[in-house]
Length: 229
Image 1 (cartoon, one colour):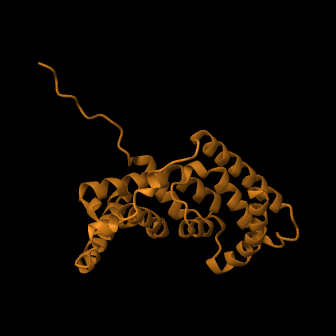
Image 2 (cartoon, rainbow, N blue to C red; image 1 turned 90 degrees about the vertical axis):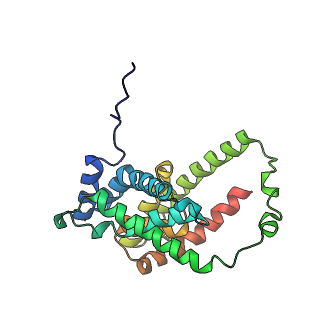
Image 3 (cartoon, one colour; image 1 turned 60 degrees about the vertical axis):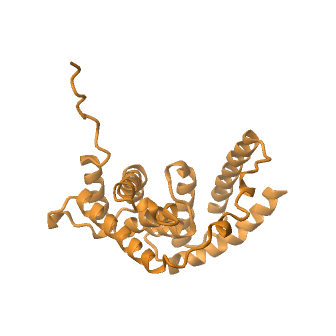
């Protein structure tokens, strides 16, 4: 008789991740926070959200991929609120919060579920995006070249005294360079997430970030004009 296989696999949320979250909440070092989040906390949060969505059947909610990304971003905003001295482990604390977050979304969805879109309307025109007329190699090569050019552009901006005039400017552009160089480790990349990452890395408010980002945006448009040519 074959013995039943014992489950000895490593847990996805272990002591290392517990300590990383505790350290994140305690430290005021922006660079350390960023390293802890990118290398340890973000991956385990991502898996935790995915498992909770699957376990409690939240995957039936509309726009579930968007909701999962939104939840992962929201978890980052409350990382500093975790207090290990109150007795709950980080895994239990954030698991309960995540489950309750999706329960709230599910209840909200019930209120609007009667206003359903007819299936034929939802499917109308949905086939066009399956037609692919580009070479995957060329597309991937162009993508790599673009990111390389963008990082070079950001490095050039850091030395431009017409753009970088104060400490806030230096913090922002340095953080942008860090994100670009670690782009493969960052799971969620949208406007909301980028602002959140920049606030965490620089210690600045959105209001303080905006002037620098506006200046960079002007030069980024020029970069894109050159790139498209």
